Every structure is written in structure tokens, then in C-alpha cells.
Image 1 (cartoon, rainbow, N blue to C red):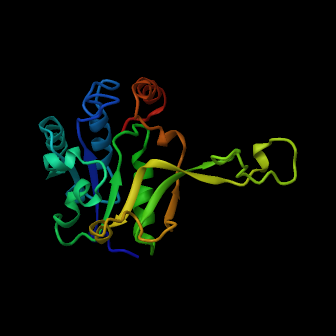
Image 2: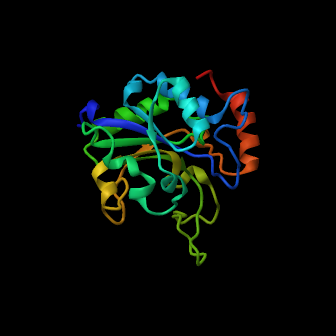
Amino acid sequence: MKKRSEVCIVVQARLQSERVPQKMIRPFANTTLLDILFTKLTQLSSLPPEQIYVSAYDGPIKEIVTKHGLQIFHRSKESAAEEKELPLIFEWYNKLPTQYKYVIMVSACNPLLTKETIDGFVESFIKSEDPGAFGVITKHTYYWDHATNPLTDWKDSPTMNTKYVDPVYEAAHCLYASELALIGRGKWMCDTLPPRLELFVMDELEAFDIDYEWQFRVGEALYKEFMRSP
């Protein structure tokens, strides 16, 4: 079990999205994606705002962070442009206060993610003995590999009935946890291959991710329809 004081949350935010320009600060359901997430984070019961950081280079993002009273890590221009090297992308890994040994990252691209689920992920990770954790969604369906070989056990049945398919778990791409020391070694969440992680199962709707323009529009409609006030 980890000490709560050793765990922080970091949100990575930048404006250089090519597929959805300015998506972090564009009007979204009479607010913005950043405002939606930051409001939830300030209402968490698992960690206080003093343990929540936003890694940002762009001025408009920093202004929104300040409005919500969260901590700013002043990200470098090089980090904001980097796509591959983990120690540079996550340059805060050895620059945060020394009390922190673990980081939880929350994506701002999932507006349907609830504060209850974030709290659940934090609590699960704190209780876990694993150095990393990952949010996943459950899938009951059929899969084939790149060579069209079946990956799903059909259980000697010629028909396709997902009721009888064993579950598999798909990355939710919104909640991650890692030991900070792993990042300095170019690792993330664990240092084994294949990765061995604590999987945190969450609702599929909450994992709706905005990565393309059409998802921005659909996500806005879903948020207006289903999301409780954060």
C-alpha cells in the first residue's frame, strides 16, 4: 500500500493538436475540455488540489489552470513538441517535490470521465502493490490478428454469440499510473515485457476519447445528453 502523500496527479496539456486544433480551449458545451476536467479534479475526495499539477507550456492553458487553483508545472517548448522520448515528454518526473514517488495521469480528452471514476482509480492504485495501473474497458466480442487468425475462443460453436465470449480488456486511454523512477529509465507504468499492470475496469462511455474533429462534435453531444454536472 502506498502513502497518499507520495501520489500526485499530473495533466499534460498543449495546444499543438493537428487533428483537432486548439481542442483543449475551444468552446465545448458552453465550457472547454480543460475546464471540465479541472472542475472535477478540484472536487476529488482522494487527493487535494495541492497534489494536482498541470504540465503546460502555452499561456492560455496556464490561465485556465490558475482560475481553478491547481498547480502549474511550467513545461518547456521542447517537451510540448516531443512525441517519443518519455523523460522529455514527462520532464516533470524528477522536478516535482521530492515527496512524490508515484504519478497518476488523467487525460483531458475524455469529457465523460466522472470524478467518481477518477477517485476510484486513485484509491485502487494507492492500495495496490503494483508500480503502475491502467484504466481499461471490458469487451465481449470477436477478434482476429493481422494474418486473419482468430484470437477469440469460439468454444466449439459455429455461431457468433457474444454472451459466451470470454472478456478481454481494451485500453481506455484516460487513466494511467506509474512509479516516477521508471520514467527516468525510459519506462512507463512497469518495467517488464510483456507489461504486468493493475487493470482498473471502467465504464466504456466514460472512455469516449476526442482525437478527431468528428469525435469533438459527437463528444459534445454526448456530454450535453449524459454528463452530470461536474
